[in-house]
Image (cartoon, rainbow over all chains, first blue to last red):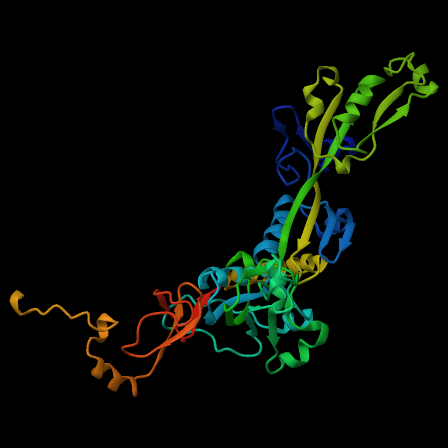
Amino acid sequence: MAPLVPSQGELQRRRLIGINAETVTNIPSTDFPGHWPGESHGWALDKFKNDFKVDYHRNDPYEASFSLIGLDAAVANAFRRILMAEIPTLAIETVYVHNNTSVIQDEVLAQRLGLIPLKGSVEGINWMHWEQKSTGDEASAAPELTDFNTVVMHLVVECTKNPDAAEDETDARKLFHNAHVYAKHLTFEPVGRQEQYFVGEGAIRPVNPDILIAKMRPGQQIEMELHCVKGIGADHAKFSPVATASYRLLPDIHIQRPIIGNDAKKFAKCFPKGVIGLEPVTSQEASQAGSGYEGHAGEMKAVVKDAFNDTVSRECLRHEEFQGKVKLGRVRDHFIFNIESSGQFESDTLFLEAVKVLKLKCARWKRGLDDLMA
Amino acid sequence: MSREAYQVPSMGGQNAFSNDAGYSNSMAIDTPSVVYLCGECSARVALKRGDQIRCKDCGHRVLYKERTKRMVQFEAR
C-alpha cells in the first residue's frame, strides 16, 4: 500500500500551534514516523534540503535577526543554547593586584573587570587556544602561560588633583585627574606571536571604552596586571559571546469571520501598529451572498497585514465582539532568531560558529557509537 | 610578677611609649622609618621607633598602615 499523502491544507493546519484565551493547544510536533496512520514521515536529507529556508531580516554587526523555517524545535533550541554557552571567547580571568588604594575592594574590582567585553582581531582570537580549565587536582596542573593562551593587559591609574580646575568646581571629573577609571584605561601588551595578530585596529581592547570600573580621589591608585584567557559561557557568563540569543515562533492571525466598521478599528488597536490593516469592503465582496459583507460595501474591514510583528498578547480574545471571529496561532517550525553579539564576534558569524559546534558534537557522538559497535 | 611589683609608667615624656628619652634617641639613628597614612588628611607620615604618633601635617592622631606591597591574586569571577 502506498503511503497516504495528506493535503496541503491539512499539512498547514498541522504546522499551527493554537493560542486560545487560557490555553495553548497542539504543541508537540507530529511529523515523525508512526504518528499518523498510513503516512510516512521518515526524515530524508533531500526533503529537508528542499523545505528548509533561511530568511534574513536584519544583519548588523552586533545584532542579527533571521528566520529558520522547516526546522525541529530541538535543533533550533540546541543552536540557541550553544550560542550562549559553548562558543569560546576571550575575557579577563586572573587579576594580579600590585596596588589598589581605591575604596572598591580588590575582589569586587576583579569581578567587575572580568565582565568587561573585549574585542580584537577576530583572526587572532580564533588563533588562540581554548583549554578546559583544570579541575584543581594536583595531577592536572595549571597550563603553562604562552602567547596562544593568555593575553596580558594592565590597568595602571593614579588619581591626582587638577591644578587648572576652577575654584568653585564641584565635578570630581574636572577637579581631579582620573577621578573615574574607565575601560579605556586598560592597556594591552602583545607578547610573542600576538604582535602579528593584534596590531593597530586588531589590538585587544574593550568593546565599549566608557565602561566605569571604579571611582577614585587624589592620592589613590590602582595598579594591576590582568590575564585574559579563552573560555566558554558554560563556565562563566563573562565568556558568553552573546548579550541575548533567543527565538520566537512566527505568529499567525486568522480572521475567520468579517470584522467591519468600528469593530475593525478596535480590533486593529488590540495589536501592535502595522499588524492589522483596514481596507474598504469591495462591491464584489458585498454582493457575494454568505460572505458576511452583504450591504457593507465601502465600510472598512480588518485584514492581517503583517503577523510577523505581533506580540501575541491575546488582547483581542478578551473582547466579546471578536468571539469566534479570530483564531490566533504560531507556526511551529518557523523560528525567528534574534542574536545580539556582545562585541567580540559579529552576530551572523556567531550563528555559523554555533552550527560548527553542533557538527563537532554530532561527529563526537558518531565516533562514540562506532566505538560502541567495535 | 606579683601585683605589688608592677610599676605604673611615668607620663613624663610626651609619648607614653618613649618615657626613656635617652633610649629612644639612641635607637632613632638606626631604626628604619615606617610610612603610615593619616586618617584625616591621608598624608604620608614616616615614623621611626619612639616617634610621636601624630600626623605631621594636620596633627591628627589616628594613623593607618599602608597596604601590603605584595602582589595579591584574584579570579575575575
